[in-house]
Amino acid sequence: MSANVLSIQEGQNLSDVRNLMCEAHIHHVPIVQGKKLSGLVSFTDLMKINLVISGADERTINAIIDQQFTIKDIMSTNITTIKSSDTVRHASEILARGAFHSLPVVDDEGNLVGIVTSTDLIRYLNDQY
Image (cartoon, rainbow, N blue to C red):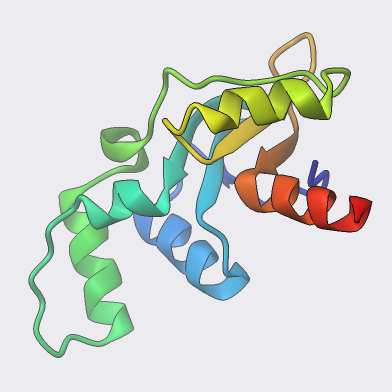
């Protein structure tokens, strides 16, 4: 589990999500209200926004995204989560179903405390051998 999770507040601009993904080289951004998980935006979610902007710079792309969409418009809200006490096996069984590639980790109150991605599981497996 990655414990220092990069997240975005629900009221921020969608371009903030896009910029975070680009700068941090990540594909999943948990969306929170305070500390409570409220949604998740994946790189695939952003790709579903069909923007045809030929030759536009980053600032223009961000302005168009923010003008047309909010985070709530594209975030997934029916999210499968796990607890930090769950096993690696449990996480791998869920991710092996192939429906998605990240599992936010929450505490008993639904606060975001970490995230497990398929990449985390591959690294874990690699460390075992």
